[in-house]
Amino acid sequence: MKKIFIVLCFNLLLCNSVFANSGFYNSKISAITIHDSWNVFIIELKSPVANGENCGVSNAVVLRKDHYLFKEMYAALLSAFHAQTVISGWANGCFGQYPVLTRLDLRK
Image 1 (cartoon, one colour):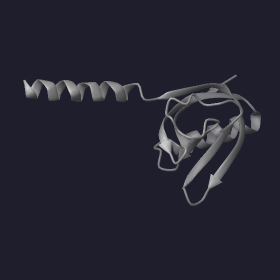
Image 2 (image 1 turned 135 degrees about the vertical axis):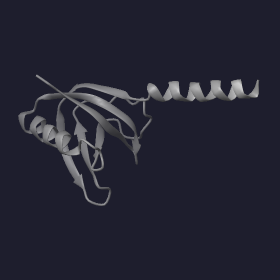
Image 3 (image 1 turned 60 degrees about the vertical axis):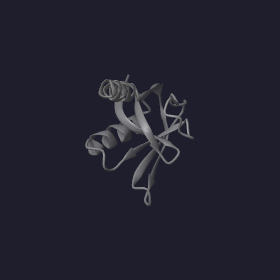
């Protein structure tokens, strides 16, 4: 019985982590800050990020340099910033007070 309870608790933990991402939709980038000591890029948005991550900041996300698609996401962010096109995406977890960018969608 104890083993079944442990397995059920473990499964609930996994199920909750599947839905951990918070989306943000149809926002333009207002600023990109390159932060040297944190080793991240701070992307400020013109509309708030869905704050399901419970981070302190709700109008920005960070792109960590250790993200495996960093170069592609950074190039896409610069392109969207200069063209003032709309972006959407997902954030998962917090880095300091900022939601961490995990997915990026470019919109026209």
